[in-house]
Amino acid sequence: EAIKDFEGTGIGLMEISHRSKEYDKVVADAVALFKELLHIPDGYSVIFLGGGASLQFCMVPFNLLEKKAAYLNTGTWANKAQKEAKLFGEVIEVASSKDANYTFIPKGYTIPHDADYFHITTNNTIFGTEIHADYDSPVPMIADMSSDIFSRPIDVKKYGLIYGGAQKNLAPAGVTFVIVKDELLGKVTRPIPTMLDYRTHIKENSMFNTPPVLPIYTALQTLKWLKSIGGVPEMYKRNKAKATLLYNEIDRNKLFKGTTAVEDRSLMNICFVLNDQYKDLEDEFYKFATAKGMVGIKGHRSVGGFRASCYNALPISAVEALVAAMQEFEKAH
Ligand code: PLP
Image 1 (cartoon, protein in one colour):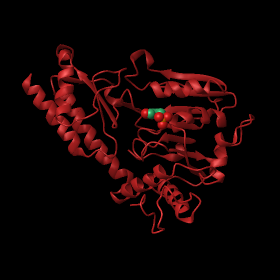
Image 2 (cartoon, helix red, strand yellow):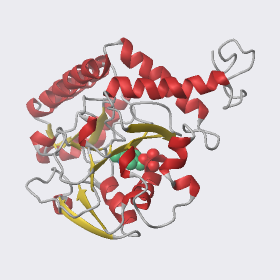
Image 3 (cartoon, helix red, strand yellow):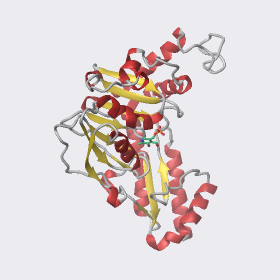
Image 4 (tube, protein in one colour):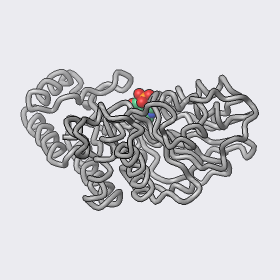
């Protein structure tokens, strides 16, 4: 409807000036809902940018890394973030689960007190592990929450900056959100190109240049929906119910097994493979499930098997259907 006639203006969302008062309100409302739903305290800004989470891998160190940064290596994306930071200063990898193909979240490491920040990836989309707590860090904590934002309550004040691509739990691809504690900015000595400086976008309310208007508008609709169902606590309840249902079946079913440490299992990306003695059935199950309408459950090539992504929008009925298919397949074998 908005694409055809935006807010009764007679022109569409994709035609109207992003500087019109009608569009201005979309951004303001989206920011306000971000703050309300995540209980973002004063002193933090919310901005919408282009470039994906991948651009944040470089914008974070560009704006915050003066000498040294600490990174926790929990997967492909965490690794990519770290690689970019090395262009800007010393990077300390505090711990890594790479040698175990990222099947767990490392614990018991020390975060150097003299690091400019500590970077984590809260949900490892490819490997299906998730950090379930808001860590305590002696230095500002930066989190890539691309694949679990709004899936569970978070304590924003424990973070210095949170970023993510919108395309999992928020909006179609094309917009990136950044929640940043204002006092962390403006401390590095290097010059920062205008477009890559967070302060530019904070000052201009995400309208320094043309923002991704349609994804931001869609994010606003998602956030309104999220609020209408009871906000993040209700979403968390639903996500836990979906994940419990599927993990219970993975653990019960003789054909399948999970791929990660149980305590680090992701609520969003549920990875499983066939047990060794049933390995040959992998293709057959893929075809079986696909024929039943379960599209896109092939696991990432670095894990193999299957990955059921259970993002916020996925109804529990979809998980029930997958569980039923797994049970039917088990009976047949
Ligand atoms: N970080 C995580 C955790 C992701 O899952 C992804 C993409 O799936 C990215 C970063 C990269 O995001 P983008 O494609 O928006 O650059």
